[in-house]
Length: 191
Image (cartoon, rainbow, N blue to C red; front, side, top):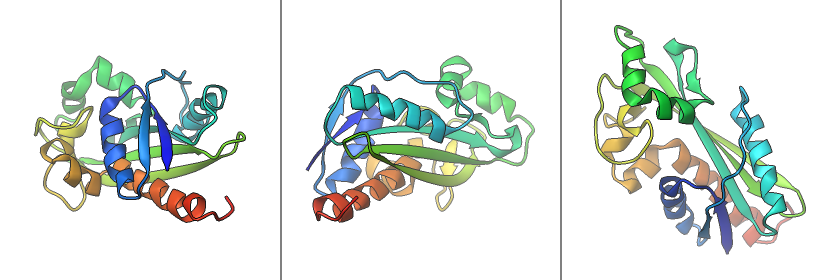
């Protein structure tokens, strides 16, 4: 089965493609810059962003967004993660975390799967972990070099793609999407 992933982020595409291959789903990249709204909710943002796809594509497609939420910073950068990464970057986050012993954080990913005819299904996945004291690793992208998921002693940036997909919010999200497609679309059940 063929499903499109609407994103301009090739790294997200590579991660998602590897996971969905396990479900015999061929993920096709559609580089299209969807408009984003500023919202305090990833779910609200992804619904708005995902609905734009109905205007450009009459196929199954996925839109995904994620954010890093740091507990002692009251959830910052959260839904603004991309903007914060582009402005103050990883070093800026580490500076904000100077002298803070509580390093708890989580990544949240939200996925929008179009089921055609303006119908969609949402998926949410969250992975808890901690913020490292320093930049570690040279793989991945975004805040990967400072996030250590629960159950590992490595940052995402220290993991190869397969290992990261086992631990990451995006890997888990796309497994949920893959299971849903396998059980409800590929096997002809009603959606």
